Length: 261
Image 1 (cartoon, rainbow, N blue to C red):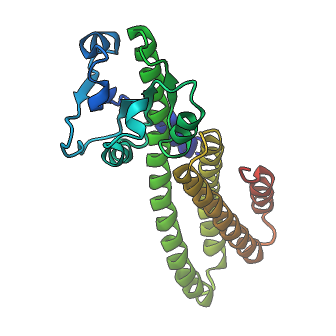
Image 2: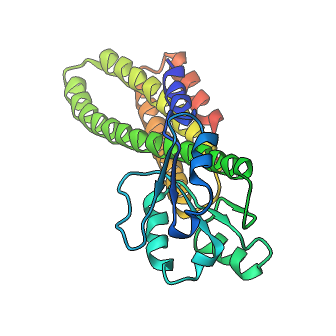
């Protein structure tokens, strides 16, 4: 049914039960980590990243660091750590009144939130939880896009196989069977088209960044490809059985949906 793909998108875009994982930079270790852990949801992890130590291999996570570290000697390893933590985006303490710090935090670090230099535990926990929710949403969207990409590849392979089978069946004068198979596959394509359109709208609502733009571009391209395949498929079905009105209606339904912006 048409709701199958939409349910898949909803399931992935709902907040997954990802662990709230916080990585404390060397400069942020003085921010009362014990009290912070008690303020976070049950099961949360707070990891101290030692200076010069290799970055943790498990993400996503929220990197907590201080404004002084943005331009300090540990800038490069901390930027690498922020990359490992992606799609979790950093929370930075301090620098809220410094224009250069703000620009660097936004452009280089893609910061989620800037806090005062010495925030309260409640302020800190609230910012980290909101950053976690945003990263969980983006992580879910990425996973959903990857699965839809695999599904589209499978559908293309099925279409190629269908073309070979159709030619053989036409030579054997099985036009009615071929037309019915076209319509069944067309209905399946419509389901996945709806799922891709829903994904496109969800991606369009996320914060703008290169990964989101790449996924959105791929989703739009996939929608265009399926629309072309669907139009061709339904046109062939109509030629095989011109008396069937259901095919025309299904084709019109696919055209009216349109694509995400």
